[in-house]
Length: 167
Image (tube, rainbow, N blue to C red):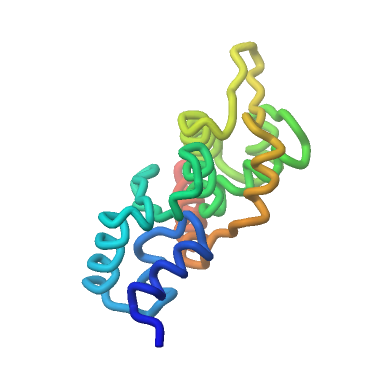
C-alpha cells in the first residue's frame, strides 16, 4: 500500500509545477500532511520547490530552472492562453492579445511582464513592441505536459472580471 509520501511524490512527478493547494485538493489530504510530506521530500532532494509569482510550485528535480518557470506559468489559464497564442501565431503585439483574448490591457501587461521576467517570452525594444516565445519548440512540448486546474482557472477569471470593472 502506498504511503502518503509516496502518493505526494508520484502526484508531483505526474503533474509538474503543481502548487501547494492543488496537492492538498487532488490528494484529499490535510494542510499539515501536505506541508510535512512536501517539506520532507524537498529536504531529501526528491522534489524541488520554486516560488514563482507568489505561489510555491513543486517539481521533479529533472526539470531545469527555465522549464520550472515555464511550467508554473502554463498552469495559469491566462498566461497559458497568451503563450498558446504566441505558439500558434508567432510574434504578436500586446494590443492584438488584448483584443483576441478579450483581456484588459493591464492583465496582458502583467502576464507578459511576468512571462518576460521568467524568460518564457521576449519583448522587443522597437515600437510597436512585439512579444515572442523565447524557446518556441521547447514551449510547445511543455504545452502538452500541463493544463491549469479548475481552481486556477476560477481565480484567473475572477481577476479578469475585477480588471474589467476598472476599464
